[in-house]
Length: 291
Image 1 (cartoon, rainbow, N blue to C red):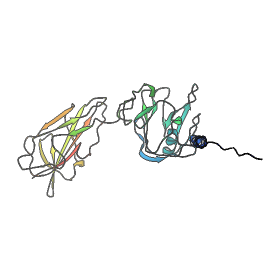
Image 2: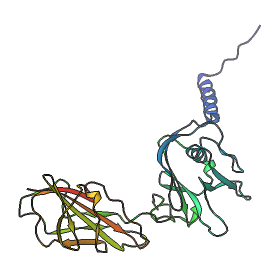
Image 3: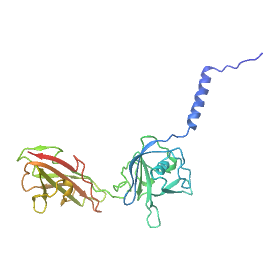
Image 4: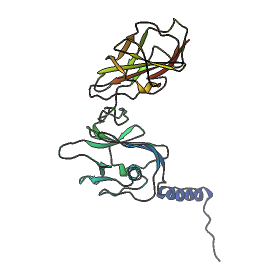
């Protein structure tokens, strides 16, 4: 006579859950869609773009590098044009070149640092699995990852967190609001704003003021201190002129502005000659009207 072994329901459920957990733990990480950027010594190596990691292993760089890791993301973003070296002590891979930028070398001890979701990763990029929605930044740094404050934030080119400063100080116009309208005789005489912090200071502030009225275009000359006729319309065709330096800036016009559509631009320059990019409406470019 055979006997059937019956397990208690609670124990059976526990075993099933345990097997499911084991299966999930052994499942390979899935490819992920991430936002990727890489900054080099003198240029942006990979402009921010969305990439998808793969199941295929990345270039090993002397150590295992899964395609779904941060190292795998670098492999996809550069089409394999990167190199790495394994630390003899730990076996962890460190990035040594990206698209021809090679560091460290005998003359320059800088190295590439990995930042994921604005947090510096001190370990190997091949050991960090990515999730969809992550932001991945590789940038050249004068500091090793372990020496960077975890709270430090950088875009990889602003001189912060050990990065190479290739960005001008942020500039802003505060005296006039975007699309603001003034009655004739009520337009401000003083143009003013701020220049943000920069690791190398604010060495120069430059402005540009242009006017369109009907089919006639004019630009303000800082030398002549008046509006002169312009052969071409459009603010970008005119030169900016210097008005000094510092965290706050202002410029006093000799007389009030006459009716027309105006564009005011401001640019800040640091001691290295890095100039901010002009053109962000409502910040460093303001369009306003005098009726």
